[in-house]
Each structure stands twice: as C-alpha cells, then as structure tokens.
Length: 156
Image (cartoon, rainbow, N blue to C red):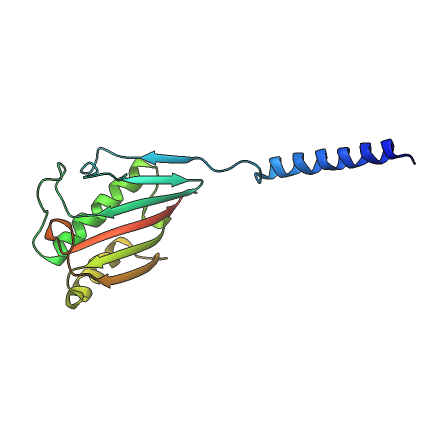
C-alpha cells in the first residue's frame, strides 16, 4: 500500500467517527432556553423563573407571593409552604409536567423549628417517589417570608 491509500483510509475512518459522534449527539451542545409562565408572579430582579438545558429545567427559588408579586400569601409555615408548592405546580404545568417530574428541591426556611409542619404539607404534594431534597435554615429570606423552594426538574 502506498501513502495515498493509507491517507484515504484514515480520512474515511475519521469521517465515519465524526458521523457517529454527530448522530449520537456528542458534537451538538444542548441549547439553553429561558422559560417563564404568567401563572405566577413575574421574576423580581435580574433572574429567570426557569432555565432549561437539554431535558433538565432549573426552577429559581419560589416565594409565597401573590400573582403580582406584591404581597405575601399566608402567615403560617403551612400556608406559605402550600403557596410555594402551588406556584411550583403552576411552573410544572406550564411545561406539561407534574410533581412526579421533580428530581430535587432545595428548601430554605427561616426557622427549622417549623420543619415538621412544612414537611407535612410538602408530603401532600410529593406522595410517592419524592425528589431528593436539601433543607437549610437561613438568617433571612426575601420579603421576610418563612420559606423559599427551588427545584430541578427532568423532562420525560
């Protein structure tokens, strides 16, 4: 074999490898999409309600605010937790998803002494196959609410 034949074979092998990588999705990066819904209050500041990357959607922290984002919904941890999880449900519904699609949540609480009450309400929304979760107590939350929850969601 001469050098030209070897070069043709190498070029053919490289072309096949590139085609396989492209078909497998290795060569195509996932697109980043900013998402939102009018079913809950608009983003308050320089952030997005939701950002999708591939089949994963990242939900910004959700507060227990009214539809305009001007007043806190509820005074107890139970009422505020329910408001937050209802807002998360609205975000999920806007993307054709449900609570079963939530992979992970981060729960930020003003007072962990209220954990049991929060957890009871949380369990009403995640009945089976609950998502992974981290819960932490923080010194202060925006608007001085009692709870904020962010989530990571997977598209089917």
